[in-house]
Length: 166
Image (cartoon, rainbow, N blue to C red; front, side, top):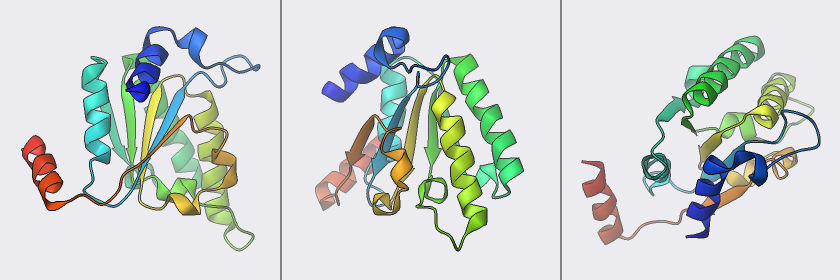
């Protein structure tokens, strides 16, 4: 219930909720939904957008590309559209942009750095889904406001989720 209150508050009074010292920075709300596939992460974002009466803009990480310039252009466009629409943004399977940076993988480091920078200036509600929270870059800790872990579902719970999805 606290999560719903936080999300509702961020939508109705964004200036009072999350702010940063730098103008235009830190006014968004970032939630990470992590756990095994099929546990309701995407369904949660859908339900929140419905509850807030906001459109849901769903994007798969694969749609953003793996070239740093393409990623920056596409992600900036998506963030701008989501903000203009007042939409809840869902970035599904965001693992590649959240992983720890290493000396050996300069290309992925560039992707993570671009993602971090653009994330800081997003002024809306963003859900990131992932299966591998243990591989997150440390820099995301200060940028994530809500993290929800989804455990394995019982057979009965899986049937309930499946019925909702139909």
